[in-house]
Length: 512
Image (tube, rainbow, N blue to C red; front, side):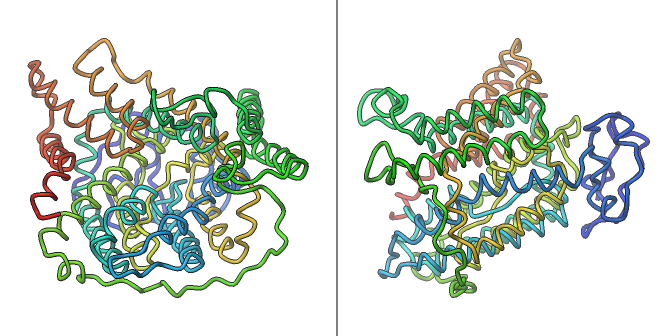
């Protein structure tokens, strides 16, 4: 295993104590200075502080707790949404997953994996069922195989990602990515999560004809939930601009109170029945607080059944699609989150890089084993980072709240998606600051960076943005006499993405 030469920002700083569960490598080095010199160099208060490096990263226990709460609030929708996506589709033999079981398993898996990530990687990232992959399973996979067989493919996908992470392949690819593209990935993710906020709040919506999206409903803002979203953006933005401690969390709580009052007065319904209604959950205090989780889906997967049902080639193609989407989506997300948190080194790597990659891979394994779909790092973690989270302690808070959500599911309905979306928009604006690292006066850099940035929100996929960036960087730089700027691994990955982008015709050739 290769050693790491510290960057100038970390040269001479003491090594992180406590070790790691994996061999010593890049991930054990201290992060960049994120606070004042006196704060970073201060002695940790106790062993707990030393383990999570709270003081060294310029944070406090209170800030980590607030950041964890904010991250959970912006992610809690997955406990409701995942059962709707996975439970609404029958598989090839007519079997459907039970929504209550999916909800319980979603909270369980997200809670356990986020806590493991916090303890092992010690980064403020949270994991949960990935929306891209669960939709892919529901739309494209279970029409060919059973749910148990589909989840078996997810487990295989996770095992491969763990191997890529443990052997250093994933780290090598990460290091081969030019710094400008890493910055572009961060900016693209910022635009992406802001766009998610705009869509989920109803600020923009799809049109049956004309432009792909429009402002509000019919080109104007008419719904109370969307107005509450805009109010949330203003409140959170003012608090953040004034550097109020806990500004994002305070803004979320204040706007949720407004939403509760508005619902009590107006009695609005869901947007599926009323275009001016709430877009996912209706904010109201629950009549019952406690539920008993049903873990009947845990362990319900068939590892190799899909290979027998649809053939080895077709099943392999499905695994390839899962791996490529999972692998690069998570890599891009972690890149953006680390840079946004000020934890990235000058080469774009971050503390415990390999540990983070391996644990994230186990999230995919756990998601398949619990029938919740691959669990991956959530870009919504940026909201907690915006609140000040810098360590794995925030992840422990998120994980504990996910575990608690299994028993108090009604409470996840209190904060509407419109309020969480307001936080995402503000954090997306924060992440745009990384655009200053891109040299747009060099077109061979500017075009791939631009394509990376715009492709993510326009295609609703981080992996697509990375793929377009990889391919365009390799081709443009090689053709313009800058071939030495293209690492050979960039060519390998670009070729893989080319195959990924034409997988539809390939699958048709295989008989789909």
